[in-house]
Amino acid sequence: MNPFARICQTRLPFTPWMAEKTRRLPGIQPVAAGEWLLRDEVFAQQMAYRDHLLATRREAVFRAAPESLPAQQELLELVLAELDTGYDINGRCVRRPDGISVETGDDAPVVDAARLVQEDLLILEERQEYALTAAVLCFPASWTLEEKFLRGLVGIHGPVDEYDADMAKRVGRMFTAIRPEQPLWRANFLRYDDPDLHQPRREGDERTLSGNGGFVRVERQTLRKLPASDAVVFGIHTYVVALDALEVAERDGLQRTPAER
Picture 1 (tube, rainbow, N blue to C red):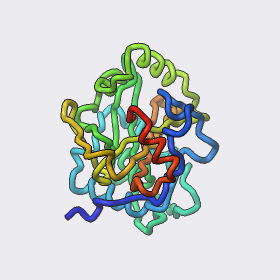
Picture 2 (tube, rainbow, N blue to C red):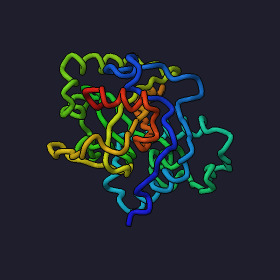
Picture 3 (cartoon, rainbow, N blue to C red):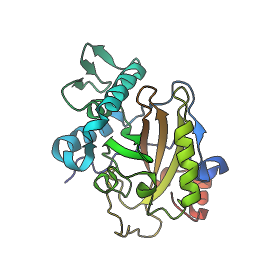
Picture 4 (cartoon, helix red, strand yellow):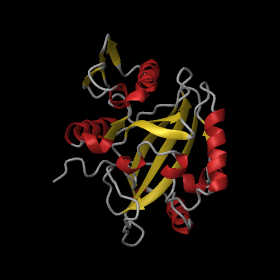
């Protein structure tokens, strides 16, 4: 039995299907100062699951191109600078709020960074278009790192019906225009029968759902430009709650939403 099969927050900090500004695509909003990285009540459980997946399924949850190393290192340095007062930093050793120590420099920098914060971390670097060159993705929502690694934005979003040529151009322009001092965020939402955070699914495989699913999963997705490498960091903070934990108006709104994103 998977000891990490059910890691659920008690509530959602926001419900993206309830507001027009977060419901519509791409639904981009500025990140408030100091809120690029967030920590919630299931930090310890999610971090333990990430550590477990990195130790037991590393090839499934971590990929990095050799040329991504400068951007990875820049990301790690930024994460270290952004950690809150719940962390204890002593040279290369960082003690997380859950009491686990991470020795930075012993692994790939993107792995070190992802072992410190609750977000999955993905790095996109500009080639002919922005492409996924390094990532720790332990909590995929119906996709796989294996299929998306080294793809550009168009290839990554190929199965998304709403991601047409016009949307691709808009997103490409946005990636170029992101300012390092102003991260951005958006949100998506999906319903699941199974609350497991690790939900890989290959393109073409059908995602089954009985009824409306007993759980709702919301991802707070952030975009941050790294000033030296000009890479973009895509962060994913995942929330899963039982459907009956929502307020009545939130459940009704979810039932009326025609599409999941």
